[in-house]
Figure 1 (cartoon, one colour):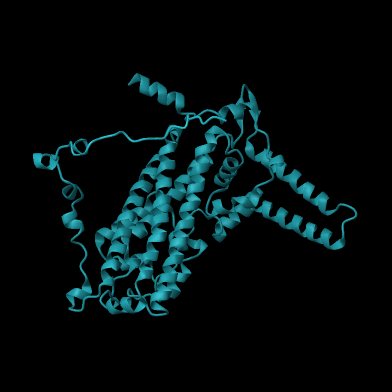
Figure 2 (cartoon, rainbow, N blue to C red):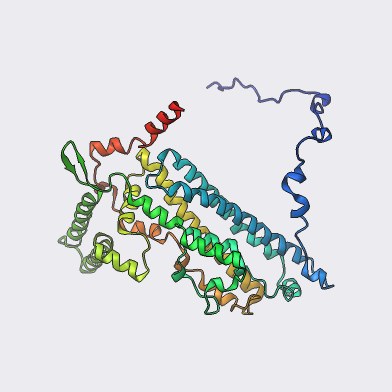
Length: 405
């Protein structure tokens, strides 16, 4: 068999040293801004003030401690910037589907940044607990709990006030005494969160509700799904009741059937779903859950490809926040043991309580797998729905708009 490249090697273009040096020092022209001016490095690199040094007892590791936390704040700023763009794109009665790639891109970038932040915290492991103790006394009452951007990010994502772990039995906003900061936090709670906007978007999932076509009513996805679940549960029951099964196998299969049936009842019965919301174990509306399930089942359809990516990235973001909180808890335990936090909290014990589902904004998406059914039971789409889910509804409008411009 002959090589498709005919045995040739990839070679770089030959050049002389003079060719490599053929350029212009544009800085000498005195036009525009330099690298340092553009990034304002004279300000940025002058922000590391070691409290231990100012107290006459410099501890070298304090420099790393400051750099790590300043880096976090810069990345928080970028995440907020991107999440705000995503929220703006979603905050419409009709979301332009030709712009969902921008939403996907913004969430993808957020995921990548959070992966970096999860790993970045481990750099602090290079600092010994004894070195931290040497400069920690100079930090009081400074605490990561006072990070305004992190609280804004939680609010913009959709962490509800009633699900927050109280800080020293007080409201989290009590540590923000500056009037402008308090006002900014209030606004972040009042404006639609990403969770709310995603819920509204999912409720409008194409094909979810019945539609009238040529004078005839075509049922939506949900009645078809209910029948499919009924058929699936019926087959599970028949398998459990099959003759000739050993008693222990029969009992196990029957128990599994009843457990599965009860699980599906919590999503099929609107009253049970409403009770779950009242209990705080679910956050998304019933219609939003239906829309998310429909996207899961038909994610191979062109129109649902990017929405499925969006749901996946939202879960990734939740997972990475949880991992970051966990890594932070382990770091604090290693550095402080059971000491009180510099801001006055119980330290490790308080932080450990925040690593829970209470801070998972998109918890409902994680639980969708509970109500998935095998592929052979998934309802077939009508010819009209296949056509609908193969075309982006805003595509023709977008093309016409660009042509008219």
